[in-house]
Amino acid sequence: MSAIRLAFANQKGGVGKTTLAVHTALALAKRGDKVLFVDLDPQGNGTRFLSKRVLTETPAEGAGYTRAVELFAPLESITPWPGVDGVALIWAGRNDRALNDKGEVPLAECVHPAANLAAVSEDYDWILIDTPPTLNKLQLSALLASTHVVCPVKLSGFGLDGVQGLIETIQDVKKVGNSGLTFVGVILNQEATRSRNYARDVEELKGQIGDLVFSQGLAQRRPIDEACSLSKPIWRIYTGAARPAAKEMLGVIDELIGRIGRGA
Ligand SMILES: Nc1ncnc2c1ncn2[C@@H]1O[C@H](COP(=O)(O)OP(=O)(O)O)[C@@H](O)[C@H]1O
Ligand SMILES: [Mg+2]
Image 1: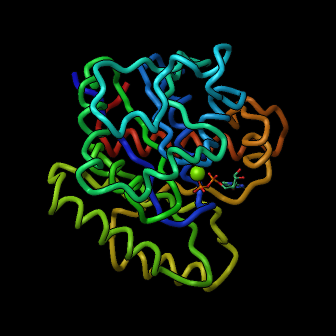
Image 2: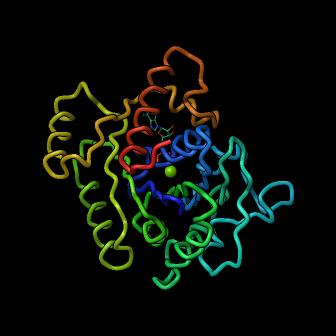
């Protein structure tokens, strides 16, 4: 079976794209699925988390393994960094300038990642794609290469503008180049459940997109931040406070897998 190719997208930063993408990758690998993680974010945070180091073009590190920037030209073959914890990786450097430059490439180059990843689709159950916090050609390339897209969202005082922009982008991509793209939904992250405005914003969002809002969200919990700085999944942080966070994280991932319809 061909891999589900799932992008984590939102043109805003700090909403949990990378956090959710790496946790989903590790959870899927843990249950025995074959997972490839593609780091299309020039910040390289997903690469750092999954490799537990900063990869560079030196022989002991990333050299010889396919870098995300290389996906923007036709490739004969792909050699992912083999990964730890069962997740293979198409890596980005730390503040990867070459990858960052791909944010401005001509439209014609944006189809190469899709073709290159389609060619290895039979080798994996899942190809998860992390994307930059910008509406640019990297984000577009990720959406063209995906079968599914999920949007982590942090509702803020600025309300729902970001979500609407994102939905329009997805609709545009479906129209112009990837009619098969499925919008899996919106994951609410760092929920301010105690604020009255927050409840109103969630209701407004549900009024706009209905069931596309995940029923399981994530509260703001410090151990998640700690997990990210230690490059460990939240379920491997053994403090009392981490437990509810891990439960929510696994709940979100279960709902995500369930919505896509590819169970264990
Ligand atoms: N639910 C949460 N509770 C606490 N911290 C979180 C939560 N979700 C994400 N974070 C932290 O917020 C920061 C930004 O998250 P990140 O996943 O990098 O966002 P993005 O990839 O969308 O820019 C990270 O330091 C991460 O650890
Ligand atoms: Mg990120």
